[in-house]
Length: 81
Image 1 (cartoon, rainbow, N blue to C red):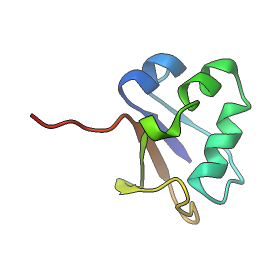
Image 2 (image 1 turned 90 degrees about the horizontal axis):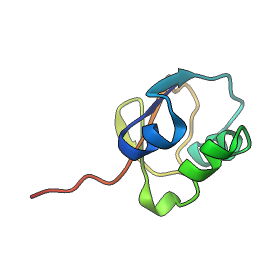
Image 3 (image 1 turned 30 degrees about the vertical axis):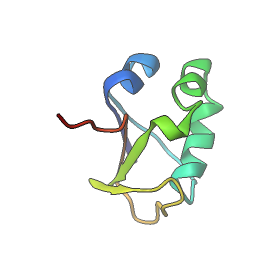
Image 4 (image 1 turned 45 degrees about the vertical axis):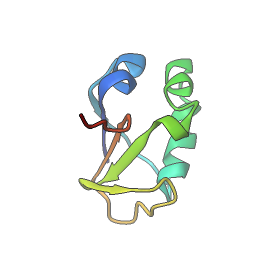
């Protein structure tokens, strides 16, 4: 599965994207797996209220299923102006 990181999430993790093997059933499960990898992931995902997620380019919640998903993107909330 391809994982994309944007804005400060990318800065904290140090990668714009990566491909991971996962058995995660939901986005929250994926986040839990990633947080266990290294401190930089734990820091990036320490406050999920400051993050948004899209699965296969559709904005969704952290309880969304990953069944059949090919891409997950993490980014801060978008602001308008």
